[in-house]
Length: 269
Ligand SMILES: C/C(=C\Cc1cc(O)c2ccccc2c1O)CCC[C@H](C)CCC[C@H](C)CCCC(C)C
Ligand SMILES: C[S@@+](CC[C@H](N)C(=O)[O-])C[C@H]1O[C@@H](n2cnc3c(N)ncnc32)[C@H](O)[C@@H]1O
Image (cartoon, rainbow, N blue to C red; front, side, top):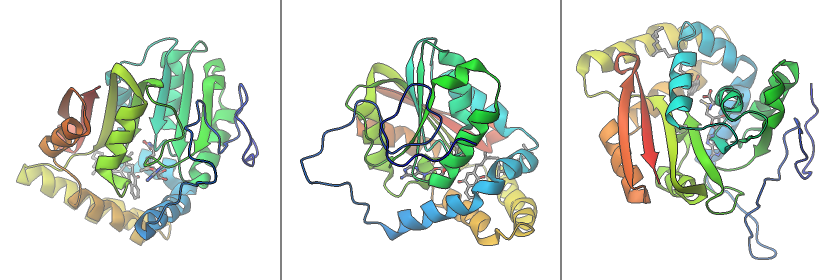
């Protein structure tokens, strides 16, 4: 597996995660990005703890359906051959790998996450995969609330199950807008906070009676109980559309997927 490079400039075809990024954003000399949120630290630690079993549990618990939802998210980003795209909160890289196939070797994919362990998994999966296009992916340790990229840098941004987990959603949406080129799209996939009592009950039942018990067998009870509370505190589709418009997006539309269990916001700069 590719070793985790220390903070070194990203070089072409690099698979090792790095702490540098293309088109670095200039901070005043001597300033540093300081994250002053214990909630963010707790979430970073949570996703680092689940990293070893994250992909496996997603496959088992969704019966592989999460790939369907992720393909839709990537498709609706309108990423195309030759584009430069961002997979924000990339985790183990599922959407980055899908984007890589969309943009091809002429394109560029940057996967950003603040969990080094998740990025380690992503880099390892990249090394083990045979598709030549995956060389176009770079893994970058970074914060969704302070992206290390210049303005108007990307042709598309995807966020798969990430927005719900960031501690400042308005700031994250503003950062996504900032790094998108005018007319480009953000495609944000997550659980749907459904207004349907039946759907919300089904979702809650599945998490309480299938997801958490199975996660408990891996010693991850609290981590997957967080999943339920984070959905309860998430935004409805209508609220996500409002969040995007308030951030400055010219249009935003939320679509339900998976019978209303999931949802995808498409926002155009
Ligand atoms: C890929 C999926 C979830 C990613 C994910 C997001 C989080 O915020 C987490 C937080 C804490 C722990 C884990 C996660 C996490 O894995 C969606 C699919 C995986 C889900 C864990 C399973 C969801 C089951 C559905 C509620 C019901 C599926 C019905 C049918 C089998 C399609
Ligand atoms: C549920 S995982 C989603 C991973 C992947 N996108 C997928 O679809 O499977 C959420 C990811 O968001 C990352 N994350 C949460 N808050 C973040 C932040 N402020 N900056 C960067 N990454 C963050 C976590 O480390 C975790 O890897």
